Length: 192
Ligand SMILES: [Zn+2]
Image 1 (tube, rainbow, N blue to C red):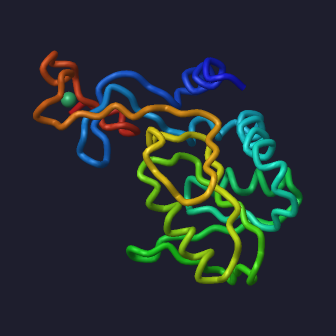
Image 2 (cartoon, rainbow, N blue to C red; image 1 turned 120 degrees about the horizontal axis):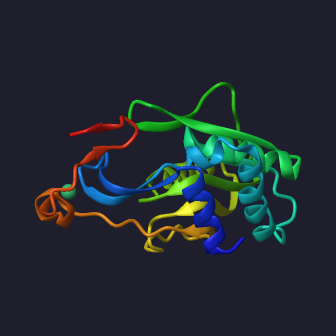
């Protein structure tokens, strides 16, 4: 899938919206990206995941997919389905991502880490720590979208089906505020 096609799908599904948004970080942005709006359609989820699968095709014998909740779960499950292997997810308890529900990683298990959107890479780093503590072997990271502008180095291959650069402004230096364009909190449909 080329970049143009990916963007067409993001816009068609409402995943990529243009306007003036207040992000959870407090920054303002002319774009808002909500990956769940693409992945609510299984046929798109299947297409994006098959690209990740093809990229890591030469890594034979991947035995387990590990993802951070919540965004990574649907991606992990679909990839696990395509590869015919199991998947688990880590979820936040307080500040920390941990494996619950009896999920386990075996020593030397060959693992692919997945996420829906990589922004700062913080959750993925926590998953890498979980894998290392369990003495598993992570071969790489797969994601639907990389918003990090390729600034994150995880020490292993990262493949994202598409790069969507995040444009953000400090609230007091926002050109959209200067143009008096109404500020919207994504998801709420409310104008602030
Ligand atoms: Zn603004």
